[in-house]
Each structure stands twice: as C-alpha cells, then as structure tokens.
Image 1 (tube, rainbow, N blue to C red):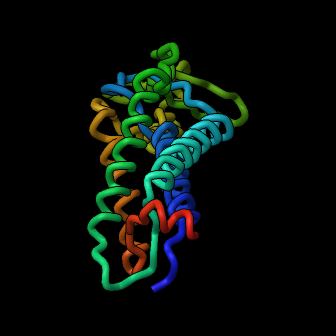
Image 2 (image 1 turned 180 degrees about the vertical axis):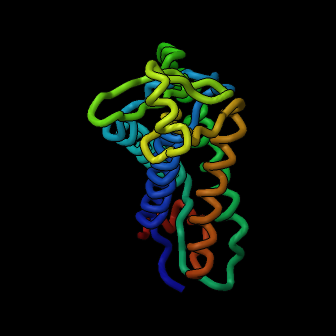
Length: 215
C-alpha cells in the first residue's frame, strides 16, 4: 500500500472539472434550447471563449472542493483491499454538482435565436442554360415552365441542365430540461473517472489529524 496522497485527490478533481467543462462546451455548439423553429437559426458562441470559460470554471470548482476535502483528511491511496464505493460516491456527487453548474449557465446563456431566414431561401428553383443564354424560372410541384416555349420543348426530357437548390439540413439536438441533461452528463464523466481509478486500485481513505501532521 502506498502512502495517502493529497495531490492525487486534487489532480483527480481538477481533471473531472475540466472534463465536465469541456463536455458542456461541446453541448453549447451542437444543441439548442427548446424546440427548434423552422427557418430559425441560432447564434452560437465561438469555440475559444466558451470552452476556456467552462473548462476554467470546472477546474477552479474542482480545486476549491479538493482544498476542503484535503483539509478534512480525505486522500487517495493505492490499496486493492479497500472498497471503491467511497471513491465512486464522492466523484459522482461532484460530477452532479458540476453538471448543475453547467445547467445554471445554460439557463442564462443558451445559444440565442437569430432573425428567421427569408422564405425565398426555401423556394425550389430550377435553372437551365440555352446555348449561353441563362434563364431562371420558378418550379412548382407540377413541373417547370420557361420564358421561351422552345426552350421548354428542348429541355423537357433532359434534366442534365437542371439543378434544384434545397436548404441544407442540420443536426441540432434539443435540450428542453437542462437540469437533468447536464447533471446526468457530469455523473457519467465522474463515474468513468472513478472506474478508471478503481481499475488501477486507487481508493479513497481518511487520514487523521495526527497523521496529517506527521506527513
């Protein structure tokens, strides 16, 4: 059995905080708040500021919590004989707390909706070329028409000159209840960290005040 280490506990909590912040930053760029509206776009924050803020907030929170836990005598030790339940419980609670902090930030600063795009963007249009003369006409569900009947007869059976523009679909998962999504995500991240540590025989232990002074 190795000697109990306070630095290991600090490093673990800081890593869990950084991982939770990074996961929240990813959510900020792929998810939207509430049901998405057709034709509505979202102004998403750039990667650099929001990722830096969330990761830094997670690290600072982990360090603050670790300082209190170290003062109370908690340490991480490599001992296979001990139970890993305490380590799992501690990290899961901290992960849920970090996730709740992310949910609080999401409720105040979610991706903002911008002005709806013009309906003309969604109109299906057909464009064809007649020996260098460009003709653009609108398309309907029953076919297409042109300004020149001869052009219609020439290209009615040949679609190689016809291109149809459609709006590109984007994947935007919806977060309607951030107070369940973010804490669950924090718990999953913390549980993975606890599982990794337990597989390496790291456990949580309590050191008495006299032992702390001796160390």
